[in-house]
Length: 110
Length: 115
Image (cartoon, rainbow over all chains, first blue to last red; front, side, top):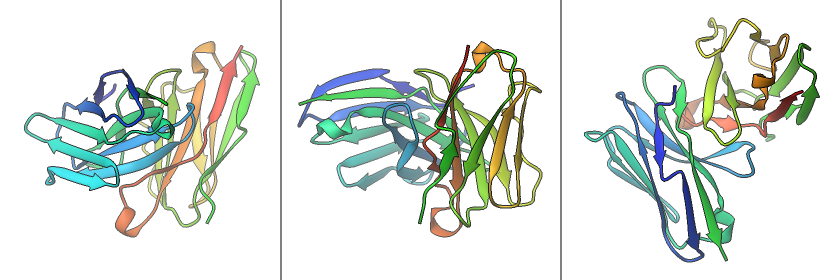
């Protein structure tokens, strides 16, 4: 079963706009990670936020985590056509398994 | 160094046949994971290897699925008597030591089509 649920399932924006997607989960976690997937192939790790962190930045990415609401958001600022991809959140609880959500498909139009 | 590699890239097989999928993790990575991704969906955890510990097989969907790993190197995922519902991309990931303990590095996947 999927621990994380992304919202929206799909997002279409113009180049230069910001893209925001959300992830909700059900159980307590140690950390939450965001991955990007191009063309249905391998995933690339973007950013990790630990359960005791509230916000983290990496380049044009900003991730927030609200453990009281069991939710996270990923913001991509000043989007580019190359950001077109599927984005997945994944939660890690005790142990080393990651549990992935269903993903958000992002289309950035030039 | 080289990333995670998987072979074959694509596999088409007939229902009822067995298939073997291979994963070469990043050298020195102690942990290795297999996932399945059906079209348009997220990743489903299948199995996890960590060093010489017993693997976590809790995600394997049926006894037709099995996996092996030799030490801290190559892993093989075997699907016996394939069914059409097994059609998916099978992704392998490895994880290393040190500061990036939690980060998994994914291979490009094997796209399996069962006719």
